[in-house]
View 1: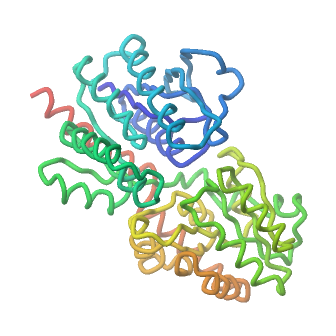
View 2: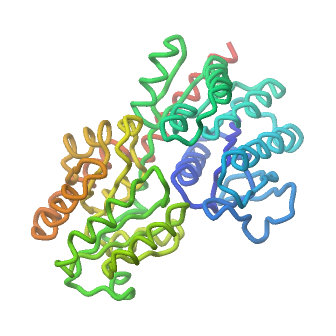
Length: 412
């Protein structure tokens, strides 16, 4: 069985979809599937093409053991919607031609969305190459863009919704990252096959027994400091102002320190806010490689996982939850709905606060900081919970069985 994965995001870029798709590809290949990836020149999240890939239309390489085809993408300096659309559609067109002429004939094509528009290229390639089209949904687009206020043009939203519906109807299988996404699609398209394909964690890679507090001391923190980590995209959706204002509220407890690690459109704004509030307890760090993350998580005391308080995010499960829990760190979760139900109510892996509520987050921080035994117990619970329910090996094994079903059905 041959599988072509089409995605705009893939390593060496860092991020949740990049890691998820690479880890899935590696495991499916070990299960005997011949996997190829068709992706863009690496540029995310800095929105700058990596050295070695600039001014190139096509690169054929191995990413680890995965055969990888890269095609040109327009990377804008502007963050406005028209520039973002040019970014998306440039890869739609380049991926179609590279996929047509450079990739092997696959049995199945798995397309990652968002961006939604990439489904056009993937569906067309499936038709041309005689492959079955599988559509993976990690965010309900354009619904999420509309609710976040990122897109307001009614005509554009209407066209995007029609495209979304077309892709769902023409997929032999739809996969969703959360149960919220799965149930949303099932309710609208009850005749379609929908499979839960969650994020997960590599428990051997994220193993707390292999790490110590070295990173903490190398970066100027003392043994008495209680270090709270946020690592990920520093964007609008995350609502990270709550961390900055909690730091201001807790300035009388100097042992509490905050680390914000990552890049994104809101980083400069948050740095300016820290300056305005005269905060010394918040430190910003650039993004790091996946290989560096276990040591950094090991050196922290807890992880903060916030999102804005929007109805849309009640079905969201930020991927950074899994790594923190695998490293036996408690989480402070500012996400309502599915994530809270899973990791706080069922797993007892941390404490929850109302999204964007500074007072509640501050109280949760003080509760953890004052009780090392509570931190330890929540962390222990967390690793057990993700080992039981979000082990990448088991997720890939289950998906392999589903792909085999789809493939066998297609050749009858």
